[in-house]
Length: 464
Image 1 (cartoon, rainbow, N blue to C red):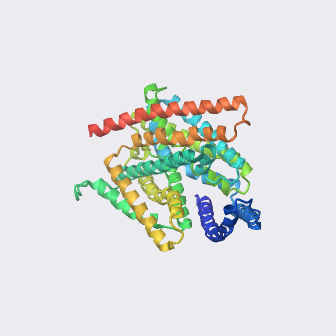
Image 2 (image 1 turned 60 degrees about the vertical axis):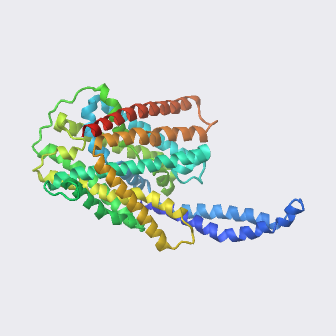
Image 3 (image 1 turned 30 degrees about the horizontal axis):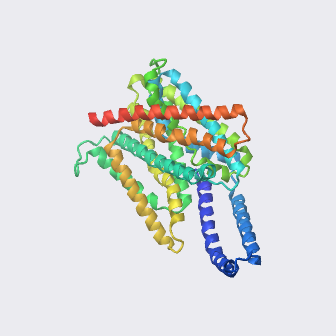
């Protein structure tokens, strides 16, 4: 799904290492030659200063040329990549969110889709403003310096961590349902927990993959599983004997704060969009890609939300696959697809962390040693995530907390703030007001949603 963008990022990092190692020694010698000028308090007029500047210009030109050579994604391919990035746990939880919030809450779902389309467009505008920017963190650094870079990086790592916790909880819930194993106990672990541990251990070797083609293949399988889930739910509505006649309440205002986090989580993907932009052979079509992708995903979520809520009503589970008739073959297909989806996500979600980690390791370190360190760190992280998911198995509340605490900042607040800072002086007053309004709305939604979802999560844990 993200093969080109991940390969692009890795190549850029490798190129930087090569440039640093290739020019570092020469640069040191050249600067050492200036010592006599400095000691004599004279203006340095050495020719090697010009050579350094020319070398820097040549390096930037080479980097840009390498990027241009890799940027070959068409509009259709970019749309598929963006849709693939967006579709995930959101389609499982939107029926629950629509039923809990009322059918009018779908207006919020659609409005958030429109706003996230706009903020995706803003990231493209920031990248166009400075072509040297290559990632979400780079944009944060360009806008607000080291503090912006640090905050953006922290939020990204929080998003990855909490998303993987949600995927693992989903794996636990669906694996328990599909296998019906109740009697097994080992080391104080119940049967569902043992099954989840086993599934995660099966997926663990994928974190040791260094071949981005293999990671991309796993991601493609994940997208396919999402399509299978959607078709299975639709088939259950049409052929599965489930009556699509439950009444959906108009609006449950008191539930909006908690479900808003689920809605905004469903549109999370902005941390990867700069990579998709850089992978396009015609970045001027990025806005069109954003509109097509978010329109597709918003339509899918809205249809799934209404369909699931009408099918199961108040009995709808936070994961719609768990509400489907257990004896139907199409239900088993949907459950297995939901089980396989998290197992394909671990390597892809960890890939940005792995690439950055490899970049930070000393260049003198062998490739085998780097792979071992990557694998150990990734495996340790996944085991921590597994322990947390088994301790706090409350899917809807974790998902809502992730959306309200992290996704709303990454998808709404930061892109607008980056755009205002980077393009200040060139923004019309109505556009400035629009961006400030989105920042304010996102901040309020995040605060209210975080408080609500945290409260519900704590109540669940204390009641357990």
